[in-house]
Structures are given as C-alpha cells and as structure tokens.
Amino acid sequence: MEKLDRHIASSMTALLVLEAAVKHRNFSLAGRKFNLSQPAVSRHISVLEERLGQSLFRRNNNRVSPTENACELAAAVSLGLGHIRETWRKVYFSATRDDVVLACSFGFAEQWLLPRFARLRLALNGAQVRFVTTDQISDIDLNRVDAAVVWHLAHPSDRPAFPLVSEEAFPICSPAFAEREFGSVQIDPSDLARLKELVPDKFLHLDQGDSGYLTWDSWFAKVGLEAPRFDHRETFDAYPFMLQAVLNGDGIALGWRGLVEELIAQGRVLRAGPVVANRATAYYLQHRPVDNAESALAKLVAWFKLEASAAEGGRYLENENIISTR
Image (cartoon, rainbow, N blue to C red; front, side, top):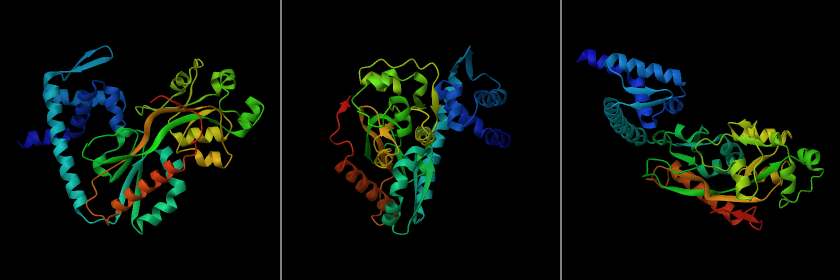
C-alpha cells in the first residue's frame, strides 16, 4: 500500500495531464491547460504507461484515442478533483477576508477597468481587490477567484452572472494611419470602399482563442463584403499589444465597444467602418454567491452592476447605424 501511495503521489501531475488529454482527445490541447508543450504531455503519459504496464492511448499518426482503462482512470481523477476543489472552496472562503479576487482579460483590465479603477476603490471602501489577468478563459479557475469577467459563461453553473458589455465591433485606426492611407482624418464610417482598397498586410489580427469574438473574416462577412486574402496575418495574443500597434499607426484593427471609447473620445483613434453587433453580450461578470451584503464581494458586484447600467444608459454608439446579426 505504501509503495502504491508513493507511485500515486509522484504521478499526480501526470494524472492531471491524463485527465485533460482524455477530455480533449488531443495532447496539444491538454498541454495548453498546463502551459506544456505536446512533447511534455507525451512524456507524462509515457510515465503513467510505464508505471501501469500498459498503453493508455492508441496513436494513429497525429490522432490519439484513449483506451477504456485510460477513460476510467481519467474519470476517477476528475471525480477526485471535483471533490477537492469544492472542499478547497469551502475552506478558503470560510475565513473572513477583507479583499476580493477578480479575474479578467488583459484588454478588459487596461481599457475598461483601469479608467474606472478610482471609482472601484471608492466603492470598495478600503477593501482590497486582487487581479488575475489572462486572455484564455480556460486558465481561469473560478474556485480560486471571487469573480471573473468572462466572454462566455463557464462552470460552475451555480455562480450567478450578469451582462456587462454588448459585443459591438468596428474598424479603428490612428489619425496618422488615416491620413497616410485614406488621405484624410475625416472618415465616413459607412464608406466601405476605402477598406476594400487597403492591402491585406495593413489589417491587424487578434488571436481570439475560443472566445467566439469577431475576426476580420467574420466582420467582412457580416457587412456583406468578401474579406481580403490574408496570406500573412499580423497577429497579437493580447488586446493591449494590438491597440498599441494601432496607436503607432502600424495598421487597422477591430475595436470593441466598452474597450475603445476613451481612445476615440481623446481623438487617439478613429472609427473607420460600420459597427457589427455579433451577439448580445461580449462580457459577463460571473461571481460566487453573495452571502454577506457588507462583504467586499457584495460591494464589487454592486459596483459592476452600477457601471454596466451607466454604460448602457449613455451608449457611445446609441444613434449609430449598427449592422445587427443577432
């Protein structure tokens, strides 16, 4: 029994990797969850196979499929982890804390939250807010945070949520770019001809991951135009980096309502095309249930609801011609 326990203890990371590999049926996708390369995932699986004396995956070129024993072992890991997570959550949140942990993307933190941060601190009335920032929603372990700004609702399903920002996207560029490429900073957003004439390399792209957000290809489809042939895509893995490239005049990108209004109001970027409403909500605030009306979490949730309501009441694009695809 002690030898078995030692084997299990030394295999915990490999077992977590196995559970993800069985779930995704793909070593590369499993690796993303733990920031591991595909060869590293293969090594973890090989360790388990050596210790168990059997193959756990059938390999066919680049495709893998788990054996029945692998599925059974992964199910046991998932069951055990679920129990540990729930117990961890109860123990962690049983202590009285005068702080709140908020997870959100880099773009949301910089473009939406930062301009409002002074108001958030005032609303928390001395309580501290700690941030976890990531652009991969799968990286957010909701059991370890009080609230998360998510782009589609995630598990656990018992967490309440409410919408923050509608997903409305439109092309943006810097005045210098507009002057250089369009010959003027006076842009009619309804004029699509200038966008059709831009060379493909002038379009900046964001790695959307599994967010479901609009891309240039889907934006062009929504406005009824054939997208340029993007043989080479200048792609960014974080929205603030792409925005900085826009500000530098390096190209034209998609801007999202809720993230770029301040830059437009300052005249640092210009809207260069019509608005596409892809879906009802781009961001939600999902949070653990509020048990104490005086807690830091209660204050955070109330503040987000107030800010979301104010944003909806004074919509920056309220009278614009929006191409709706809902």
